Image 1 (cartoon, rainbow, N blue to C red):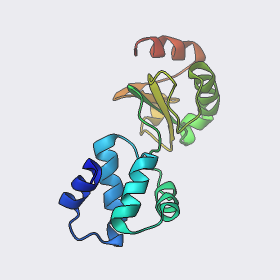
Image 2: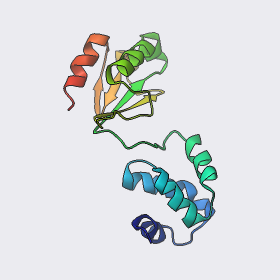
Image 3: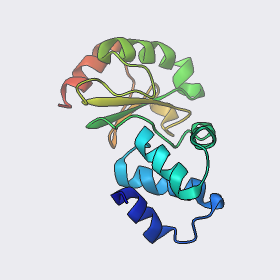
Image 4: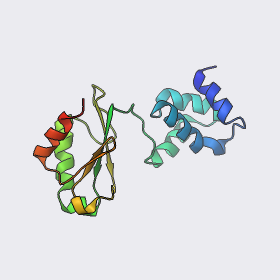
Length: 150
């Protein structure tokens, strides 16, 4: 039995199909994302098809299917950020690091996520790298900011 199945057995001893979302949350907390291997093992443990698990997991934006980068970037596309050029900043950021939202750079340096609001509307457009908020973004500022995260 794999270590993931052992862990699931300890935390979810009843093995109920109703535990799918808590199981997915637990696996992501432990591994940082939901791997295809984890999907297969969850399928075996809960006796649910892999396609059903993917269907549920992809419905919720909280679940990630790629390993996280060393630094997580969240770009705000809420109303204030959108009006202040958030879409343009996102496009420039994608070109700069070479990935789309939901992905991780090949070198594992960054992962990218678009979010609805970071709650910093007065200083839009904003992005968060790890726990650091960067405000009043411009394309020039992006390069400077990214250079601080190795």
